[in-house]
Image (cartoon, rainbow over all chains, first blue to last red; front, side, top):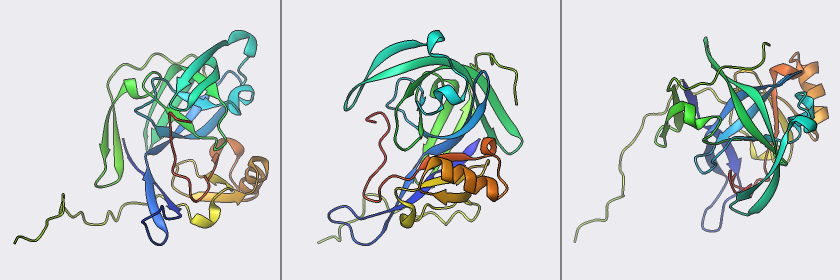
Length: 152
Length: 82
């Protein structure tokens, strides 16, 4: 599955001139919870040891605080409280789709993006970042855990 | 004296198959709804709820769009730093 990087116009940094265009390896993922599913754009984040979803979706997906574990994660900028929950993830491109279960951490994020880290996402693919052509290829490596919900 | 060379001189032809809509700078700070294939922005608004409603008015159900907030135009996205 090959995805083009997301493209965004931004202000110039010191030393740059005019509107700049930056490219971000973002793919669309469906998060499938006990009662609802949501499409969320996720940044492929090789620096993240696990997959994180915006806390905003925790209750909307039908996740229960009582059945979740609370942990603290260390990030590059400090520590953050995380609610852990099991749900299904699905990636689709054209007629191809892959779905699997994962333990996901829910964290507050103002931009509402997911962070697709190693556990739960990157570990299940061979990933090739093509910085020249600004696209990323995900090749499943056959390690998808079975989905836990029957929906969509 | 030799002219300095660029570290990489490889050129790539533009990818004409590329169809992901670029996010204009004007959208910074706003909420945008993406189509289910992640290629097209179908609604823009100043809150999640307003964006969801705008997408619905445009014919896209809530479970068929991905809604996120465009970072400020000076902000480069960081992942694990959050």
